Image 1: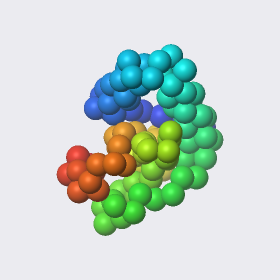
Image 2: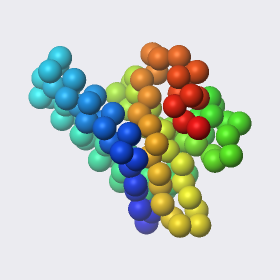
Image 3: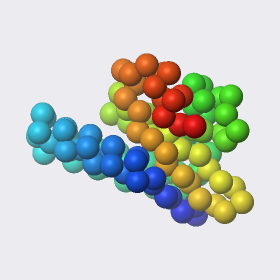
Length: 106
């Protein structure tokens, strides 16, 4: 089973989105965010390469993958096979320009 490590930035963004969901839509939506995170963690820990490669980051050194959650957001990560660690780098709002994602992940 792979270990999952969230960068401080990704963790902060996730918390921000959960908080905003709570303020705008209520408890049910913020709980859905948490359920999505748990489902992502369960799947990626068992099968780190089960999500598709992120097409906007295909020319990078690392093989970034993404998991779409709540129809609009993507959890962007890469799997380090040598250390068996999944590194979660970003949460990307797909309504934003793909260029923003490319700039955010260097």
